[in-house]
Amino acid sequence: MTEALTDPIAIFKDAFARAQRTDRALLPEPSAMSLATAGEDGSPSLRIVLLKGVDDKGFVFYTNLESRKGRDLRARPRAALCFYWSALDLQIRVSGAATPVSDEEADEYFASRPRGSQIGAWASMQSSVLESHGDLDARVARYEKEFEGRDVPRPPFWSGFRVDPEEIEFWRNRANRLHDRTLYTRDGAGWRVETLYP
Ligand SMILES: Cc1cc2nc3c(=O)[nH]c(=O)nc-3n(C[C@H](O)[C@H](O)[C@H](O)COP(=O)(O)O)c2cc1C
Image (tube, rainbow, N blue to C red):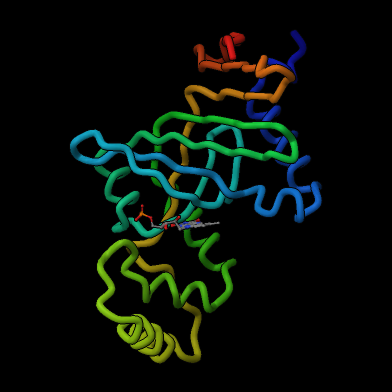
């Protein structure tokens, strides 16, 4: 097997580049991925987040650390991700340990966001109950005033996680539901490669 076929991160990056080159009418949001976390009683919960970076160390996304997912991951630092790019007939599943990104990495990404999103990060108590939209508007106004005329710092409750993949599975659509499934499982410094029944 060639090097390229034994490295699922390289395969992911290649597919992601293809997804990004695909017409947005066919594949609107290549970075969107489902993120599954586990609650205190083991119940899963699932939502979409955006992939903001991928390399040999893992898959990075950003969020509010006090949100449901943030609390889940801080208490039970394991996650599963799933991409589905129908235009490419491809599903990709990833699972592994989730670790916080460094403060420097989070600062750098936060600084690259539009100012409105930075204020929004301060204003939103993500996943808490919002009594009225007026309350959110008031918080936005409060932080706009607080940071008027200066850079918006990253909130201490807002950062990223990196999911270090232990398993990556590529599912490719095939005729008669005889789909092609290739599972890569971390094995020391390399990966074990297996084909699964569809
Ligand atoms: C296309 C799309 C992209 C999203 N990207 C993010 C993201 O990168 N980070 C995030 O915290 N929430 C993102 N959200 C919102 C989440 O799906 C979710 O509603 C929110 O994070 C609260 O989730 P939680 O209560 O399970 O923590 C996105 C939603 C959609 C539909």
